[in-house]
Length: 513
Image (tube, rainbow, N blue to C red):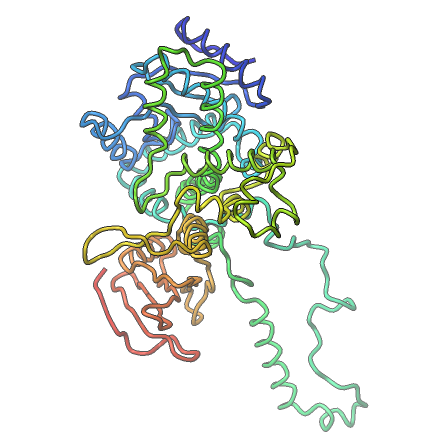
């Protein structure tokens, strides 16, 4: 049963009606609390990520200014906002027309169902509204103790690194558990010194002192090698910093808060196309089959089409998501799947294919449950779909400052789309070494997939990493096809070509940081 929260009577009636329709279609969601706000209030909450009691920071104020000015100048409008929480909170814009409130409520129930049932949200904190309030109180307390500017300045560095997490770690065990009962085989604790058994009077000949020294040296080198720090490259850079950076207690607390919230928001980035597509699918279904009145048709069509509009060179997650779900439902209703269908290479035959399977609704609920955007697009984006919806890959023409069609080839289109979705289109960075040259320096590794790092962004990242690590930081990458080491020592940025095993050639470029 949904929770009423100071809603006007007409909106309470709408909520009851639309919730009943959503349940009738099989949607399964948390209790829903709707609140009605004016645009300034909604912009403020949107700038805080949907959490009114989140910790204070200038970045949220800047985002509020952008949202409120965009609304005043007619450039943008937020119709709704919905929060992954139990109960689920959703915000309605007070000035919306009645038809918009219907659309928004139906859209919210689609999101709510997705939050509750999609596996990628299964590890998120369902009491995040309370948790962010606790975070806000802790940080406000720290600001009172250590100074607002000091704490906010440190938050700047943490927020600049918030994407350096391992988005798959909630589902994958990356580390072996260490037990105090794990002993060396045969009861030894590495005590084998390389001696051969011998009688006392022969020991100096069979176990010469120089040989034993060399064996001890080799053993220590092997032990040091086996204890590489970290033992394997660490994808969760924030966790590595929490465990190993020389932070004091309040700094560690702030970094932990930023990391927790980064993991909470990660599934929303992983499922943007699916989540918006699913919510749009259901608001479209509920509105057009259940609750839309004839007098509201034109306004609904205008607002829905505006949401689905696409521009060259830009991906509209609402449009791609809803059309893919519709395509999946139609294909599984008609039996357009399986070996026989996939082996048919005649376009007209495929278009007429209809076995009356009627499995479409069941299939889209299954898809909603188990996929994220990468697997969703990889599995269900087909050549027929791209042809029908005229999906091309675009590239930017720097000379003419325009986007132009790069390819109509399906493989190229799909690769470009998946490339932009993998890791949110951001570089994959790991901690390779935490004690480089035995000086406590950190070395990061950039997994290069054909696109160079933006040097200004990389240098900003190194600067903020240095602030937390306090020792020189480096990142191995590739620049113009050549292995390169970017470094920051607290004063200067350097760019050095990498050759062989050494990282110490003369700097190619030096910039004051």
